[in-house]
Image (tube, rainbow, N blue to C red):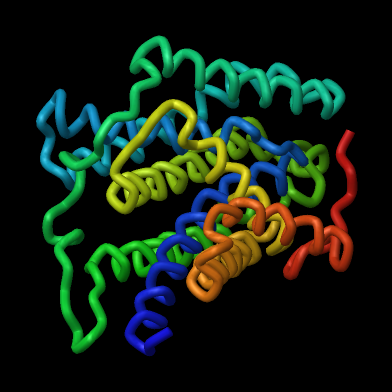
Length: 299
């Protein structure tokens, strides 16, 4: 492999890994507070791609406005899911909320098939021409999108970390993750903070969905399944409940996936399997993940 090809693969790995990381943050934030794996999160990611597509093609909104509307709309969608499917089960056994999450996932996928059909749709109309044009740097060919995606992802994560550690809502989130009942007794509006958590996680998934649609310009109602699974694996690998771990896990998973295929092209048909093998190895060696810590179960 030439040095130029290696550099291109590095940019591809950074881009893919940062998208996995953004999606994984939604899983890890909800789990950190509720000890719930939100299996509908990958479908929220999928819905965001349809929202931005229709904002551009149906309502003819400028690209920047369409992005903001999509992030806000997807964040609201996440809050609605929490209000309808999860909040009524706060005091129920966790298995009930888990079953509800699986049901919500199937419901979103099937309602999208009814509304949008199962035919894949092109995202070419959403792609920003400035981001997808090819730039030659010597013998290296990259697109601005390959740089924009990781930079934007890191900025979003930095903003989230600032919110978690420098603001009162962030303090409330961290307190709820430790002891939800004591935090409630301290006067914190727990349901509002949980709704904010769903909004932030869904908004980050929307940002990932928009960039995913520009990178892989074809969408369908089941497109969120595999990225959702891989993002969950990234969250577990980095340490479920850790925002930094989710991003680190996503980057590592992206590098593993891209580099193995780059060095062993004959294994390209098995690229999805590497993520699950990585999950099994992590659970054997370090069940809490790279940055994870033992978390008490919540009843």
